[in-house]
Amino acid sequence: MEMLMNPSQMTKKYFTPGVMLVSLIALNGLIFLALRLIFGVGAITNLDNQHPWGIWIGIDVAAGVALAAGGFTTAALGHIMHREEYEVVIRPALLTALLGYTFVALSVAIDLGRWYSIWHPLIFWNGNSVLFEVGICVMIYVSVLYIEFLPIVTKKFIGNVRFKGMLAKLNSPVDKLLRMLDRGLDKTMFIFIIAGVVLSCLHQSSLGTLMVIAGPKMHPLWQTPILPLLFLISAICVGFPMVIMESLIASRSFKLKPEMHVLSKLGSYIGPMLGIYLAFKVIDILIREAFVYLMVLSTESVMFSIEIIFGIILPMRLFFSKVVRESPLGIFIASMLVILGVVLNRLNNFIVAYNPPYATTSYFPSIGEISVTLGFVCIEVLMYRLIVKYFPIISIPEKAGVFKTKYSIQGSK
Image (tube, rainbow, N blue to C red; front, side, top):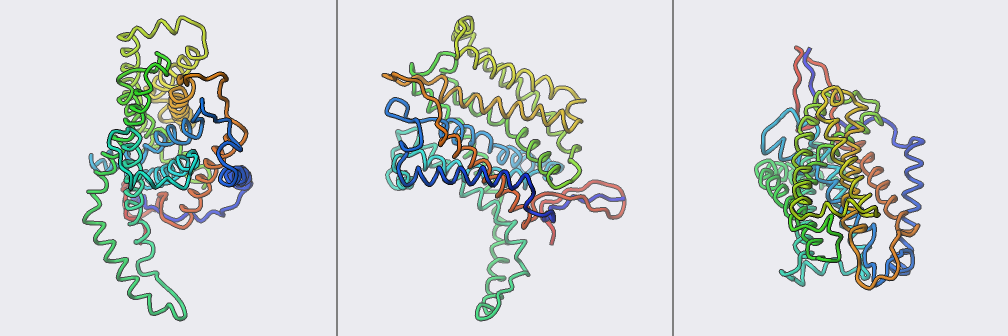
């Protein structure tokens, strides 16, 4: 019996008790977001002149960019390295990255005092600014992600354009346009895939460069010249765990059998990558002799230790275990540890380690900041569920012929 794995639309109902709860959290976030846009950033945040950024940058942007790395890591593995067995997870990873980067851009906008000036980097260039490079790369990469998603849209509507009434005359021209666009994308998609991987590497590392130029404002446990490299490696490390986590949650939500034959193989790459990341971290603090700060009991030393032990060492040990990799619960826990470890790393770099000059008080996020952050996460979940319901994203097994596993990214036609 042959087993085909083809992306299909989900037929499960959209609203469930869990979706209703997520919707309420999203609505709460939107209310605080409206208050921020109407009354200003100071109305709902604890930001001030000494603390110009908070969790909207540390989590929504810095961590959000890292957690969206599954898009370029799976694209590199499946398309550039031609590992076709992993193409079953590429579409979900692409959608997760697309939504992630979209909300990263929104988070940057709402963190700006004048949020309506987010377009300025496109016109007022400053090549000496690290943020300029990050901003331009993110803007271009968001565009690339939407272009990579276009073939899914065109294949769904080709032959299914059915305007009615006065618009019926547009059916044929629109269908021809979709077919022409689909052919053009088939021939040029490799350019966008390569561009996406390159752009991702650039801005992932540049976020680290942003904290390097902070200099003595950062705690020595994190302030290092190789911070751009550490940011890039950690983003690569968290890419596959994000894909595994998303796949397992989606399978449970839509009552599908987990794709463990793919996820287990994907998990086998994570242990060695975490080992490389840990080696760079350890060698760095030894060379800089920053390990002496771990001997002093402080918030920084405790947070650094938690990041290393629970975010790198423990999941690395779990991913080296074949039993864990073949267990849906085991590989989910290991993936979540990596994800939380990278989130904690970005939070440590941008919030805990950063000591603003002349600060007289410490920063702690307000209810409004937390609400908007949770709201954005919930909106992403709701949008993901909506898109997979109407577009062929998640693969479903189909029986046919002789037993053999195949993978297709072309979707149902």
